[in-house]
Length: 344
Image 1 (cartoon, rainbow, N blue to C red):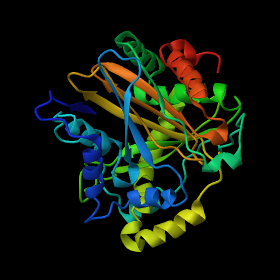
Image 2: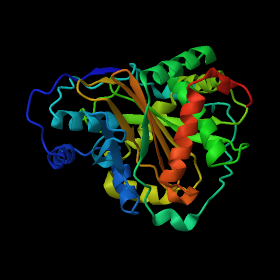
Image 3: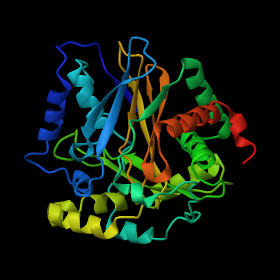
Image 4: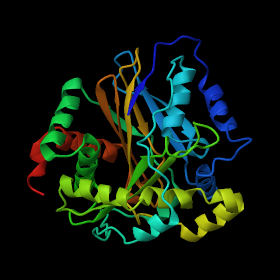
């Protein structure tokens, strides 16, 4: 996706004001995907999205947070950029995906062949489920490192999105879990352009799981993702995520209680926020909330020709800023060279 944010043209609003504006959009019309974040908030599970702004040559970003129950990452970042005086224009849409009919969903009902998840965490402490994750840790790469990632992805025969998921998986199994683990990642899908919510800043994110074993190559990950798109898994997830339209918040709360997974059951989420051009900034970064059941939140995005990598780890898997830095350092190392293809 390509998103242009132009130079500031108005006074910068306060973050509190932008957060209020983000939340007020759901006052009249509920965000049906956001209902699930409201449900988990009632279990004291953090629902904050984190957005970082690199500027003035600083090595660390200035972090701001917004609640996921009021909108998704693209919507939240756009609101914050507007609060800083940038005209972000129309929000980036995903590729158009026609809504499949019931016959098509039935025809493609067979599940995608993929390894069965089995995660051997080096540390797993269910008693830490009530704790919140640390402040995200982020690295802003140089233009040369950013180009190296693109070149390595070309060598691997995949997009940079798939390449960075594959190398993040390798970094996790080196720092946080056993090498023989079969990871399951949440792969978000931007549904803008295919669905129309009441407000463009609301949650338009669906997604599906991607299972990765230690011997799986990037091309095989690409093929699995393509197979899940062909099965319309993003639409199957969207139908479940928007059940609140019919059952309301109480119904979503009950379902969440019933389906809530134990700590460490899944690996986590991988988010690629695409490409943004924001004059005056060195770079942008972001992080999803994560949770005890999905303890690893990794994110990447491009801004002004420089890529950022970010990580937020939950304490149930021994997550801390120190371990996140260890992970990020290895993720960057693996991503910048096609040599990572050997030895797995």
